[in-house]
Length: 177
Image (tube, rainbow, N blue to C red; front, side, top):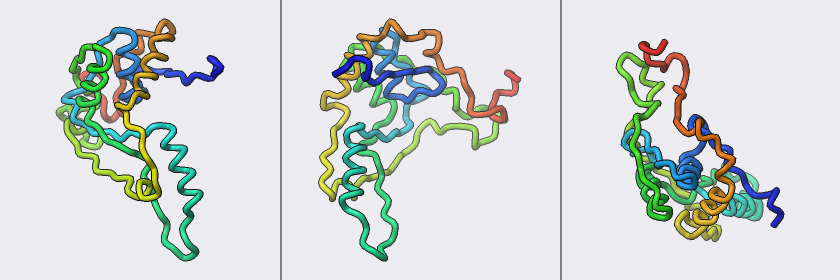
């Protein structure tokens, strides 16, 4: 309840996560920037579910001699463009497609580029089987985060909104070297 303990969104266009970016952009009235087609799939999990997954793993250890058990800590996936639409529908923000700073550029090594479309196929069946009841993005937590962002929007550095990075020097467009 102490205001000093409220989660901060120290966001910048180069290193921020897509959900934080969209929520911050909506809070300050900046268009939600979708890089490229927005067809990249991203995984999400509510922080409360992360804590619950750890608790479930501790309470349900493997039996002696069992193989290692991997628990995926994600509860839902969304394409970036669909996530932008979800946030825009909640906030009234506009969506702006911009060039993808990690997109394939002619004569640039393939490992340095990001596909316009991808399918992230992940499941958290093990945690669900242990009675995890996930909190989805559209169940209101996003609204709470938007309200916090709006309350503290005056602290945002608007010069850091655009993404200006490339993955590494080998990925840089030869015309920019």
